[in-house]
Image 1 (cartoon, helix red, strand yellow):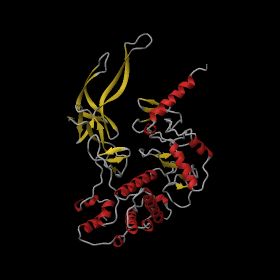
Image 2 (cartoon, one colour):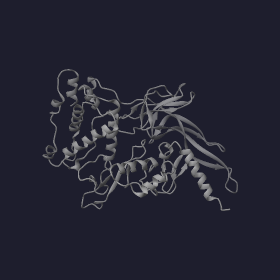
Image 3 (cartoon, one colour):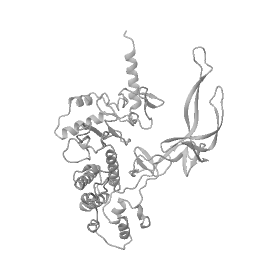
Image 4 (cartoon, helix red, strand yellow):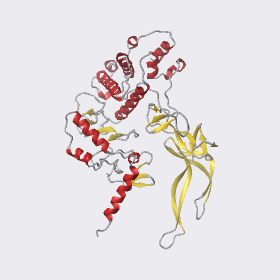
Length: 458
C-alpha cells in the first residue's frame, strides 16, 4: 500500500479513495480457507476504514469526544471483520509513527562533567550502595559512612561506571578511580567525558509508549529555550512527527496517507487519536485468561464492544476461571501507562484497585466523576460512593499510599514509598500521591493527626 501512495505522491497515478479501497484485502473466510490461522492481519482494512471515515465526515476529529466516535467505529469495524471470533483479536496497527524513545532534559551545573555514550549524553549520578558503621561503642553506636558509586540512568536501567582502583578509607567513603567504560550486564561500553557551560543536558529515556503521541507545547522550554512536546507529564525534545518524502516511502505513516490524499487533518486531534489507540492496545495486552490463555469476553455486553469495557470473563467451560469476572481498566494516574488488573493487585480500604506501578487507587475527583456518570445514565450511585465523596476520603488528596499486594499503608523511604512486608516500592518519580499539589500539606496534616492520637490522655 505504501508503494501505491508513493506513486500518488509523485503524480504518476491518480486514484480516488474509493479506488484505493478496492485494493485486495483478505477476509476472515479467506484466511480460514487455509486452515485455522494462528493470527489474522486486518490492518489494511482498518487503515482504509479510517481514511473513508475522515472523507465521509469531511473533517478530522478535533477533540476527545469526536475521537471517541472514530475509535468506536474502528471497534465496530473489527467486530464486523472477525464476526465475533475474538480469539483472532490482535493489537490495532494503523502505522503510526513509532516512538524511538523519549528525549528528555535534566538539570546540571555549568561545571558538571557528563558522558557521551554511543552518541547520547548522560548525566552521571552518585548511586547509593549502602552504608557501614565504624568506631562503634559498646552499645553499637558509631560513625555512619554512606557508600556511593558513580553511574548513569540509561532508558530505565542503572549502568555503573567501570572501577579500576578502589582504596578503603576508615572514616570516609572509599576512594574510587574510574575507567572509561560503562558496565552493563558484565559487558563494557566505552564512553567519553564531556563538559559544557549549559545548565541542562538533553538525554534519552525509555519510551513510555509504542507510537509517538506527544502534544507540542505552545511555549518553549524555560530552561533550554528549545521547543518540546508533552509526553506523559514529561518534556520530550525530539518527537517523531515529521512527514515523509517520497524517497522515504517505506516510512510512510497514516498522517502521510492523509496528506497525500488531501484529506482534512487536525494536529491536536490526530495525537489524541494516537493516544487512544495506544491506550486501547495496552488493554488488549491483558485480555487473556491467565489459566487457559484464551481471549476474555466482555461480561456485561452481549456484543464485542471492547472499547470502554472494564469487566471481562473467560467463556471456556473447561477453564478453572470460567465465568469468573475480571476487572481491567486504565490507571487513574494520567502520567502512568499501566493497566489496572484485579488479578495482579488488591483493593485499597475504599474499595478501588491499587496500581502496581504508581500506587494510585482513588481520589475525590474520581468519586465526583463516577457519581455524575451514574446519574447521567439514570442510575443511583451506591451510598458508599456518596459517603466517600461527602467525607472527602480520596487517598490521593489525603497523601495515603497502599501496597498492591498486602493492602497495608506504605511509608516513605528515601523519597520512595516502600512496603517492608512485601518489599514493594513505588519510585518517587512516578508515585501518584506526590503529583497532588497539596501533597506536603496533606502529609504534614496526617503526621500531626497521628502524633495527637499517640499522646496519652490528660
